[in-house]
Length: 387
Image (tube, rainbow, N blue to C red; front, side, top):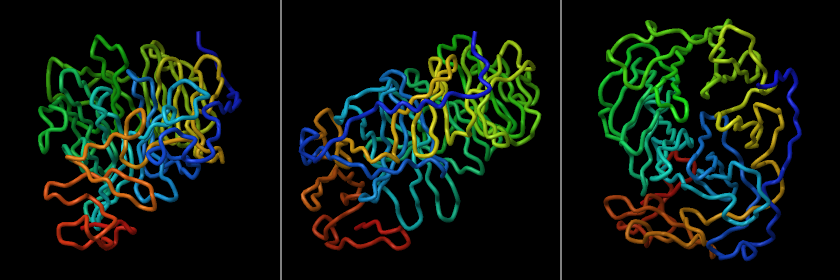
């Protein structure tokens, strides 16, 4: 029985790290760095996601002394671990150019591949999403008029795509360029979710106004209209649902008008709604009786049963933390496949930079790294250098 929380308990337990002092205190300097100048990127369309197999939450940060944003992760459980195993650098988001601005994480494709979907702004076409494979290669790219989302089934190589631009839901292969597969449903789709351990294939669809419908990942009739599906929930204030998620028993959604996060029982969606958070999170997800969310520079979780709130990462804190140098991965932060990447040293600090198909690094630090012999600032890129 979930508690009706009229006021949430903001306990704010910070238990994620102790302070490191120097790069050397993080273990494998200079491949491990001690930093405390991170900014959580959360108000430009970035989202959080949960790696359920590895029990970690992914989000986007940017350090003041680095040009590129990073996708990083921390454990779902609070911890006192202060080494690089707590805050892990999953991806360094290289690739900003004159016409492309890298925004940050949208979704994780899967725990096995660790591929991600990133949000990119094309300076002419507007926002797009890109499946971001290893070595900065791109899968299918979608133009957003409103950010939609995906459901990935990595074991069967299946991708479901909610694409608001086309008013359709598709089913196809993961990351297949310019081919989203067959049309499952027609009609406005701004977000879709399927519960964990969902043996029935239930699919919940938000139409972008105020209604959430229930369909199926494997409908008997393909191409039918979303508006003809059973209505699960109708929010009384149109255009106020920012984001939603579902468990096997409850629907959770953030309301932009009330600036709160609510839950309603799926068995009685016309019954009373419960306040889970008395704030509007930038992004949130439900997992195992917790709402994980980003808000005001912090990654936190709140129990849907007790209301206890715990801070997992606080970018506003002056507590230092350990993290791998840019582009490096592994337990000792020293993995960089040099058949696909270039190791560049700047002021004694390395970074692992992907090579493009023409053999040039995707960004550069020195002239000798470019086949043309010239490394220079890319116009209207904010300061990134390229060959």
